[in-house]
Length: 56
Image 1 (tube, rainbow, N blue to C red):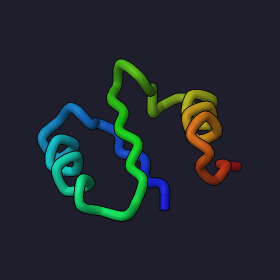
Image 2: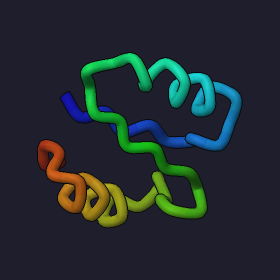
Image 3: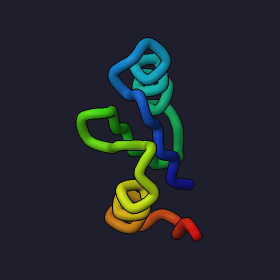
Protein backbone atom coordinates (compact mmCIF):
# COMPACT_ATOMS: atom_id res chain seq x y z
CA UNK A 1 0.00 0.00 0.00
CA UNK A 2 1.24 3.52 -0.78
CA UNK A 3 0.84 6.03 2.05
CA UNK A 4 1.29 9.76 1.53
CA UNK A 5 2.44 11.55 4.68
CA UNK A 6 2.14 15.34 4.60
CA UNK A 7 3.85 17.48 7.19
CA UNK A 8 6.80 15.09 7.13
CA UNK A 9 9.12 17.55 8.85
CA UNK A 10 6.85 17.95 11.87
CA UNK A 11 6.81 15.93 15.07
CA UNK A 12 4.29 13.36 13.85
CA UNK A 13 5.90 13.15 10.41
CA UNK A 14 9.28 12.41 11.93
CA UNK A 15 7.78 9.67 14.07
CA UNK A 16 6.06 8.22 10.99
CA UNK A 17 9.46 8.05 9.25
CA UNK A 18 10.81 6.01 12.14
CA UNK A 19 7.82 3.66 12.19
CA UNK A 20 7.81 3.27 8.39
CA UNK A 21 11.25 1.70 8.41
CA UNK A 22 9.78 -1.55 9.74
CA UNK A 23 6.61 -1.49 7.64
CA UNK A 24 5.89 -3.39 4.44
CA UNK A 25 3.99 -0.35 3.12
CA UNK A 26 5.53 2.26 0.81
CA UNK A 27 5.57 5.71 2.41
CA UNK A 28 5.93 8.97 0.52
CA UNK A 29 6.95 11.83 2.80
CA UNK A 30 6.33 15.44 1.83
CA UNK A 31 6.14 18.80 3.50
CA UNK A 32 4.79 22.26 2.69
CA UNK A 33 7.88 23.17 0.64
CA UNK A 34 7.19 20.21 -1.67
CA UNK A 35 3.40 19.95 -1.71
CA UNK A 36 0.66 22.55 -1.30
CA UNK A 37 -2.15 20.50 0.21
CA UNK A 38 -4.64 23.27 -0.62
CA UNK A 39 -4.06 22.70 -4.34
CA UNK A 40 -6.04 19.85 -5.87
CA UNK A 41 -3.77 19.89 -8.93
CA UNK A 42 -0.62 19.66 -6.81
CA UNK A 43 -2.05 16.67 -4.97
CA UNK A 44 -3.05 15.02 -8.25
CA UNK A 45 0.48 15.47 -9.57
CA UNK A 46 1.99 13.99 -6.40
CA UNK A 47 -0.34 11.00 -6.56
CA UNK A 48 0.26 10.42 -10.27
CA UNK A 49 4.02 10.91 -10.02
CA UNK A 50 4.18 8.30 -7.28
CA UNK A 51 1.82 5.83 -9.00
CA UNK A 52 -0.78 6.03 -6.26
CA UNK A 53 -4.51 5.70 -6.88
CA UNK A 54 -5.85 8.69 -8.73
CA UNK A 55 -8.02 11.31 -7.05
CA UNK A 56 -11.25 12.39 -8.69
